[in-house]
Length: 394
Image (cartoon, rainbow, N blue to C red; front, side, top):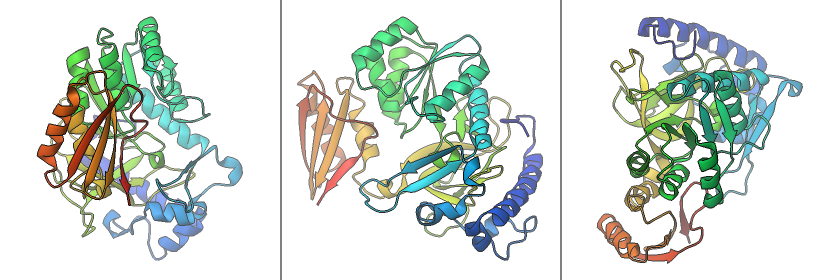
């Protein structure tokens, strides 16, 4: 099956998935001690997806080495992640050369939705690590015939603007807050398209980018566990097309653990179909999302991944970082922010050169959080870094 094969019918996709799932289960049970135990009693080819047990980040942390299905000599890359605020064992994800190449192939096809051969593409993601995200995106763009420039993570926006003005990118790829700020710093750049990934995509950030650059705004969803690539929007902007050749995505009720129909939000669960080094069986991502039914404007009748709302643990909190994003990033004068919560006191530090915006920001937050004491202060230096979060202090 080809990546994003729009000619395939839902019935044909179901047949492909059944066959590939049976192969992946048999492969995982044969080559991994963890899956030999987990899938004991499961007969590949007969078991339905919903009959299979779930796996989680806790399994990866505790028994990740036992989940690996290839010899160490065939592991091309290992990504180590520590849970924020945790001093426990890290989570390690393993990839073979074939796993990485499959992602390169996906990036080559997916980026074709927004650019083509000869187009210049600025990538605002780290590219220093061999086989890291930036490197894989670069390889995918080169395969497409585009001209990539891997700038890396932005720490100096003056320099990033200078590079943009010299390079004049057709397409810009980066985290939502990074691209939004670049648009605020250089509204005259006007790339044709941007691709937002690696963090929650707020309506506020999308609205600012579209207004200032008058460009197409595409979203992508991926995890380290999916080897970064998973689903991406097409020009119809009616949901993200899934790598159906590689993954099955389910939406489940995070409490009842039952599958949910299209249009009903729940936890995103991922099962791999062709993974060599590190298969995943009904892997609970901890992300809240929704599947979209019906036909896409591009002609595909396959289900698509719709809005990804964020981390479930964060969404359970009334005062969460996504609400802060939607409220604060609507002000062009706010370049970035950081926030901390101590008991019932919320402190927000905004990066701005407009001393009049803090009062407006505070008023907007007070409408949302009436039972919290809110203070807003200003700085002209970096207020936030990386993915925003609320530091919850004891």
